[in-house]
Length: 86
Image 1 (tube, rainbow, N blue to C red):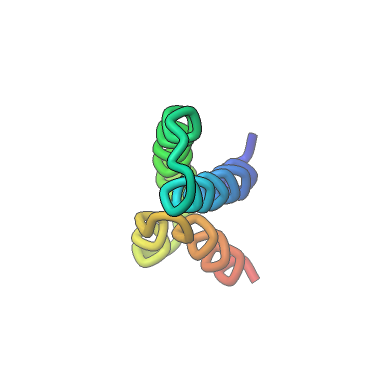
Image 2 (spheres, rainbow, N blue to C red; image 1 turned 90 degrees about the vertical axis):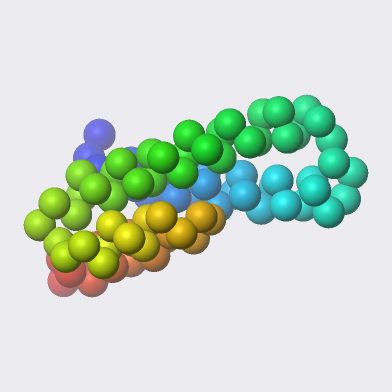
């Protein structure tokens, strides 16, 4: 799997899990959602950082630092990488 494809999938999972966790926190706070969503969000966050570091080996450091922003960092890094390729 290419780093860009991994980044695209991990960024989407990271954003969705963060939104689900926040919605759960603001509403019913179901333990099952927190138990499943928390680790899934954490793994996807780390996967976004790893995929960005693999994909941005020739890009400036600014692309990698965007990946560290929780929730939207993967999307920002992906956008910056696409802009560098064009």
